[in-house]
Image (cartoon, rainbow, N blue to C red):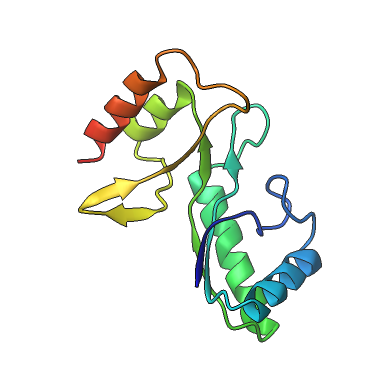
Length: 133
């Protein structure tokens, strides 16, 4: 099984605060049959100021720690990107972390504000969809 939305990278968002807790979570995941995890920390400007390069670096550090701890799990870096105008700049600067691909298109995990879908959100989604062709 693959977990496509996981916050196990320590210290980046509302996931584990430290490496030992992150490794404990990885052990639990492996025991539950998860063989691969896509690490998707929040990218929410002003709250979780993560960057694609910072997430990749944290993922590399976690891979090393998993190996050293003897935890057999593959991980990959992506992010849960908060919906907002900053998405435009991230797409244009090619700094948007993609979760993978589907039917020849790149896929990004977008997080909407809790409790509401912003007015005219479909326009930004349409623009994002056209941008990833």
